[in-house]
Image (cartoon, one colour):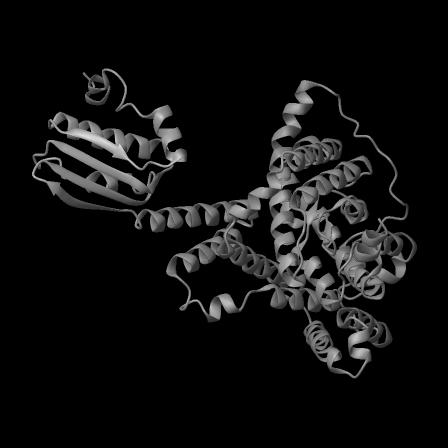
Length: 494
């Protein structure tokens, strides 16, 4: 217990506190913006970000990762809010959390091992592009001071760390926000601020059970939305956890993260907040600003609610240009530039998977769809690659006997090649098929073996299978028909 407390909470206290403050400032405009996207009051997103960040700090499986209200989740809520209102959104949020908790106990987080590196890279690049694109409205049709402030913010962010001692002691994004705000107030510049996005809440969140009838009709209304929210939320959270694992060179508990995300959404729904998940942008800000432990996530949530409730007049004056500069830094730091620079050196299939994931996510703004397409393409390319490694050798043993040796994996992608490797027209009294170096994986492979055996038998040859491993024998014995009675009728359809 003491070791866990020291490792996850106190090992990097100063860095976690400072980075948590930076993240809290960056969360405010995004939480408000996501609330507007979902069609709800800004306080719904702010309360959600506070609840989720605080709860996940204790229950999550990835220390240092930031979870809050997100744009990907907000897009899924639009229709529900428009047709049924806020109360049904809160109910859907609670059900989303319950589904995610169930996914954690079913260990669905372990499915992340099936997501290839190319898909993760594509996911990261797509999010970096989306983060940058989300800043363009703040840079379109504005006066020149906005551009000047944004450029100055980027100079501060990238230049401040080079200052002796102090450059490493204070996160440069925090310095950027403070200095740009001071300059705007001192010069009385007329630029867009956080306060222009919407009114900040003036009270702490309180327990609020959704005012919906507990009936089957209510369940049928919210369940489709909750399933979509649960899937997208877990997908984005687990992908972000993988990215933070790489940035910090540490491991995380994906199934615990599923349960933690679920519990945080249940709490958010009970305190007037909308569903959320991990945020790659804020997580990268946290890591780049020195945050590593659970304390950084907790501080981000606590600072967020303290600032919007008790320091709302001050926070409302932060120029959006300063936060845009921070988010541009995030998009630049998030994008995997090596994946573009070295694209010619990578296998074409890997590059195609990465590019396809980026294109689908950017065009649809649907993270789940993009990752699904990437995983599907990766699986197809892998199956095609493995299928090509299967071969069948043959040799004449004596005048009436031919021996075939099968080497490799026999499954749906290689079954046709397997069948075509045998010469059924050659006259033989006996056929020996050596399967010692082969493995049969699925019903298609078993069907191909049945077909080969029965074709040889129809030509009058005696067929002997030798060397089959235990795993292959299990599936062949269970589903194969070549050693069953009256199989000729089964295979020929007579």
